[in-house]
Length: 153
Image 1 (cartoon, one colour):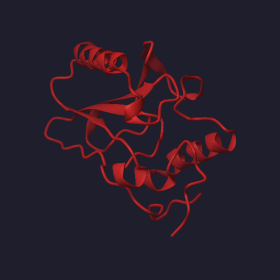
Image 2 (tube, rainbow, N blue to C red):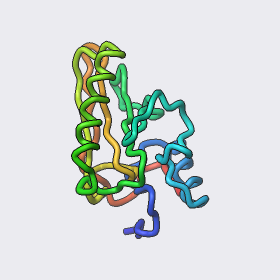
Image 3 (spheres, helix red, strand yellow):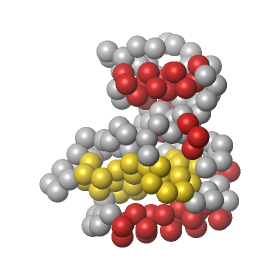
Image 4 (tube, rainbow, N blue to C red):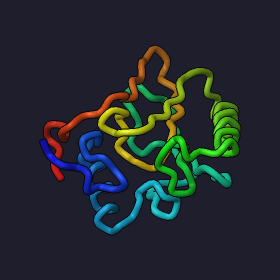
């Protein structure tokens, strides 16, 4: 089994594609958190004092719409969230539902050990997902111990 503890900003075994893994490895090598607002490589739709929101660059299979809601500050543990962050997150959820006509879907926020949570990125973030009609979206909860077959660091 490999030791992935040297990576601060991501957990390699939970990467789903080589492109995603390459971006995370490059950012880590540069000492950058790839989810910090100044390092995001896709358009940030809007931000608040606590969160920034973008469409997920690597959406889950079956998703019609998928948004990433990412902590603005370097927050890595759910216990670090203030009541104001929780309230702001709720308002973002409502805003996205209204502005993007999200008629149904799911909200996923993982926490803790990525080998258990399934998160590939360590900065606290949530997914708001509306599946395509008649489709299921299965955000992974539960991590891996080794890289997916075919992926390499």
